[in-house]
Amino acid sequence: MKTLRQSLALCLGLLTATPVWGQEATVTINAAQPGPILAPEIQGQFAEHLGRLIYEGIWVGEKSAIPNVRGYRKDVLEALKAIRVPLIRWPGGCFADEYHWRDGIGPRHKRPVGVNTNWGGVEENNAFGTHEFMEYAELVGAKTYVNGNIGTGSAREMADWVEYMTSPSNSTLAQLRRANGRDKPWTLDWFAIGNETWGCGGNMRPEYYTDQLRQIRTFIKPAPGQPTKIIASGGNSDDLKWTDVVMAGSANMIDAISLHHYALPSFGRATRGTWKDKGSATDFGESDWFALMVTATQMDDLLTRHSAVMDKHDPKKKVALIVDEWGNWFDPTPGTNPGFLEQQNTLRDAVTAAVNLNIFHKHAGRVRMANIAQMVNVLQALILTDGPKMLLTPTYHVFDMYKDFQGATQFPVTVAGPKYTYAERSLPAISASSARAKDGSILVALTNIDPNNTVTATVTLEGAAAATISGRILTAPAMNSHNSFGQADAVKPAAFTGARIQGGALSVTLPAKSVVVLTVR
Ligand code: AHR
Image (spheres, rainbow, N blue to C red):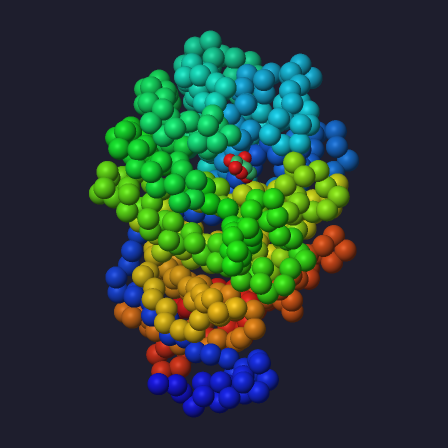
């Protein structure tokens, strides 16, 4: 039955097309039955040798006029530390399967120059290699995820790389590492055997890849005491067969299998589009807003289906499902090298980032890492640079607002509420997640994907009491509001005043197209 407010809103909506009071949702948080720990790595980052990510975005060299710490630009480094980036994946992506690690060690001026055949055909001078990556991760305070080369590499090459990075011995490879300036082994947290082996990593069939994986895995031997977890190259979006075959053949030999899912507005259009006409990052109307929400929220269904396949082979959930590439993919910014995958980042990206983080929280029993693509200057970047200038994107601000979810204990959440309807298709308007943070407070994340209607949510905390509430909101006047180098603060979080404690529950007014994170004590 409709409330008086809903009936009035409906009548006014018919007259004005925009309801004044919006709609109502009920969010139930089960704090009495905590779920799994939210792995910090769910907020991981992907950093590939692609376009201006590594070179300019991270690495400018010691002699650069851009302020730097031993060659790493300071502004980006500080911004990454501020959001406590938990993990960085490197060196690719497709680049990884053409990367030979020996090219990236030793004196920089002597390193060979190659061609980045995947990304723009530009020269790769290998100035940023294993030492530069490992040292960067240490500076950021992030765990390390190195992606091995199966496409053009070998078991020997990968095994040697792992020994070079992790061995405390006096082996020739460990001594070579020392001669190159690093005495102590680094910590190698994750190592992947190939990337997208169904595509740019070798166009393999899952059966063939599984056999290769089993063979190579046998010879990957991180030094004793290393925490290294081994990742199998997983399927693309809804390729359940890939997950099935790889899990059936190798579940007892791996720690994780990956999944890649990119959201393209073209794929959410009523007439399914293509990779050719993906849609603009900034110049879009509501149809492309809705279309992107459709393909971004498909992540939930994909995780459910891949997890079900994994459950067949691994009912105890020992093997993690890691979404090591996810994010929005639009047409490249006009005038840029199309191989550099540069795109602006708007409020729309912030909304889908929050929705995806909520989905990962829901699936935390299986999903123990997710890396947004990519960290700086590429695809759904958190940070954009232009020479010496840097800006933080709306997506960055979402990660900032969510950072206390790292290591928190998930609470199950159910949402009942309005639909966001566009052209006769509907999605749930409200996405939510909740957890107990390490400091004992309760975090509640709520996103309203509807770009037109305010939603008032009644949030019930079962098994917990609320005494105080505070929070931040990210929203902006237009769907495509974004930060530019002329106006770097157009979209940024603000203190949230739309929540109050009422009769033991929370009453939260969520403006259209907004992301809210609350801390309840
Ligand atoms: O993130 C860009 C590319 O997308 C990666 O290199 C590849 O793995 C995926 O297809």
